Length: 211
Ligand code: JB2
Image (cartoon, rainbow, N blue to C red; front, side, top):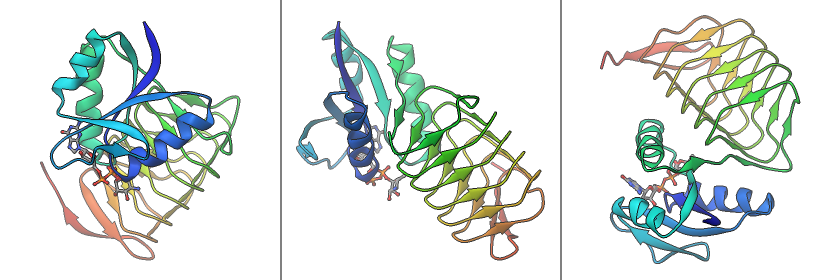
């Protein structure tokens, strides 16, 4: 069995996650991209097409990280990898602060400068991006993405696949549903139902996606 990690994705997010994994002392063997991919992502060789996830498993790789920013696609590819017997590793910057009482799922990315406070629960495949803060008792859903410099106050619930744009703020006790998008710099001061895109200060709904 090989201990090196397979990274799915070969774009900007993969670069950041490869460096996080290396900062943890891990080695990345390959990136698996799709479409018009470069030969290398940083200095990691890139193979093209999801069939390589199965091929690399047969070669003895068993640890994998999905480094793709698109929330639904990240979840789909992680499900594919799990079905083939991979385990999902986490990519946690040594320069992040993660409370010992916080709970992190699998396949989670936590970038430098992020802070996750007491009793927060971070779902599988979530991204807590550079300098984002997640205060006590928050629940961050599966494959949600909290972009750089977001501030999420205590006891906030954020649903599966939701995306908080760069620099967003959320006041305490608010519930944000699944597949919500908050535009950059938005300030959320009330609950937001599933599928909504909200922008501004305070954040107001501009679109509801029912699918
Ligand atoms: O179906 C797929 C597939 N679709 C796209 N299978 C596999 N294996 N890979 C897929 N990809 C890969 O996702 C592409 O080959 C490409 O390598 C990558 C997308 O790269 P891009 O640079 O466009 O986005 P990203 O996901 O790396 O980064 C986004 O999300 C981050 C969180 C960007 O918005 C970044 O700015 C952001 N920081």
